[in-house]
Image (tube, rainbow, N blue to C red):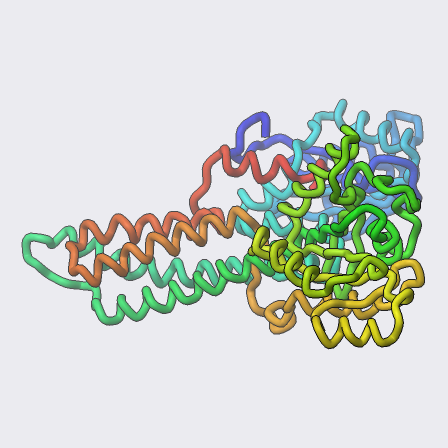
Length: 467
């Protein structure tokens, strides 16, 4: 926020729906004067009604007026603080979706004393007013951005407080023991031990196990939130663009018999069983003197580096040495050991049944397809869905998808490992207390019990205006 990150007494306003023409638009105000400002420009249909005296969470029909000029007939919803999204008085005006009407109402209320809200300022006020913790506030943006069932499920779980409740409980238990350790420091001359070391050892073991589980869940959470990048690679004219079109069920990429048609990466997404897959059709890999094509081939290797899954496409008509292709696949896997590589034999419909059986028998992990005829695509899609185990999500386990949370969990885990080493080495309480404070600090960063203006500024700057 430009005016600082502490709570302010002014009233903010913003369009809560995307700007443009639609059936309706929602304009939101929050702040101590929200109801007062709207009541001055709202003429209710029911005579004698006053927005300043109506019950909270009620909707009222009337006209938004600029002196004697009627701007629009609208519905006005009143939320009295602290029982609102932000914890302040909130008013939402549902007007007709004309861009002109939206602009007129916004300008009218700005002239009346409201100011434009900064990005994410409504949710920031909710956080500062204790309506939600920081991880829940971040989940609001994730819910808005979710574009698949799995990413929505993770965001909703976090927004409901599942993750933050687990962290808060761990932090509270650790804080109780930390208090006893700190108390020992006050009586260091008496050599008194307030914290039961065996119970503390048990607590450290339990917390580190939970932190390790949450840290490990980030691999799944990041995939479910951002999608799985899949690079389609192979020699020119092997059918990469045809495969992309078959997967997307549309003519996304140009298909040509001329080698080197794809000069740049072409990307698109599909959602399979609630998980987003981001396919990248790359330039064919070959030796060429064409400068532009060479740039595309360079980008192919860059996209392989970024991808989690590589679909290695081979032209069935060019199969002469199966063992040589196996060695080629092995070399590719050795070059990219962290990637999952799936070999596809395209144009398999051109092979004899005997040749197909030979390939299946020799290398059963290969998938025979015909991108042009769209055969074997279902088998490929089944393989893709098996790559992601969403069991943790379906079992309602906490899944970490936020990189900031992941980093904080890692730092807390490292600090607790240092505490564990200190206990094993029987170090003094004052040295052990330093690492305990570090663990508490990083756990507090997740829920917002410990924050800085820079941190909050970075988080809420990524929100849309009006949320």
